[in-house]
Image (cartoon, rainbow, N blue to C red):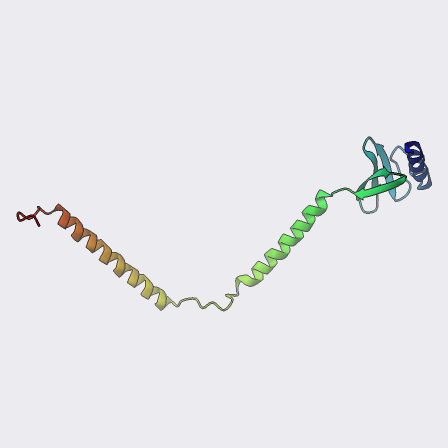
Length: 135
């Protein structure tokens, strides 16, 4: 059976006008390897690995890293464009006014000053000599 498969592959190569050396006059170039037959589509650049499964020659397109990279670049470009378009939009969120920001900062400053004053009083009480009555 393996010999009939090889004969079929040889016939296929001859019928397609593709010499075994890998030089092609037609659309496909084919080269026999230890793992099967490599088929190059000279119009698209796609590479397929062909193997005999029982009596049939089955070709599967090889994973193309360049195609994957181009697809990812296109996806990221579209995502970037969407982000740029949405950068100006605030999605209905109301940002605080300058006056509101000043009020919050003023409140925070008062709060921080009150805590610092309380810490100073506590430190002063800890440093003060103990009352002779034991309090």
